[in-house]
Amino acid sequence: MNRNPLIPFLLIAVLGIGLMFLLSFKGIGDHEELASGGEEEPSTEDVANATPEEIYQQNCISCHGENYEGGAGPALVGVGDKIGVDEIKTTIQQGRGIMPAGLVPDEKLDEMAEWVSQIK
Image 1 (spheres, rainbow, N blue to C red):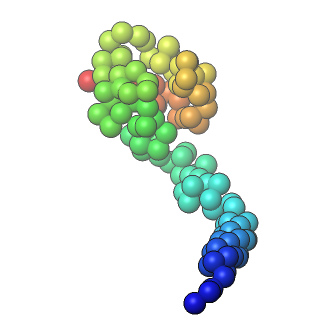
Image 2: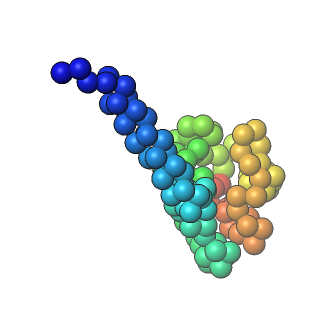
């Protein structure tokens, strides 16, 4: 009945180290998928054919909210009454505060600014 108490600890350590190496090699093979979060980047052709609503859903909804109510970014409801389309376009193009620049392609800036100005 005198068993060595180190054997269970040794087995657990060996299994843990082996599992760590196995998962490390699995992660090395999947590094590109893991880095992208499993999401595909929209192609430039998809963005060029996208409506302002679709661009909003892809790039803006996380900060400005599903119903344009704001969150990390300001609310967009009635923004067209406060500032002009040109200023909205400049903000979309250059960014402001924590909003990054370049979320909307240049060929869609006018259409997006007009759409944002009409949000009620």
